[in-house]
Image (cartoon, rainbow, N blue to C red; front, side):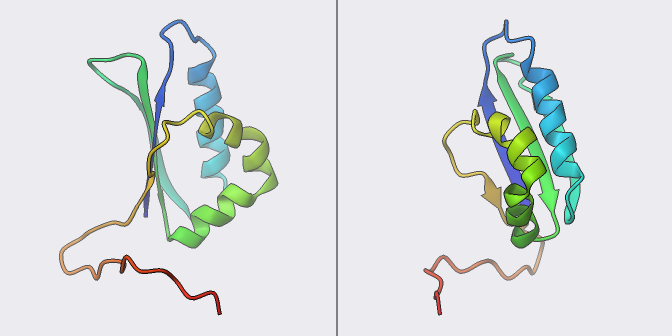
Length: 105
């Protein structure tokens, strides 16, 4: 699965880059993490992105619930733009996730 977190940050926020790097490193240490990158928009330097790839949605959700991530990454991730961030990978022939409510029992 892919996770895309976008951030709108004032250009004079010197700390953000380091904070985002530490958040990424903390996520990268969790089981199920595959890869990730930090980027800044070419045309609008106030727009940043953190993309990460995970083995599956469960690994990502468990990572978010870990103490280390809550301490180091969640404060930065909470600054992300309010938009959906989790995506399923769509390769040729992939059976896509059904958009239906899940049973709780």
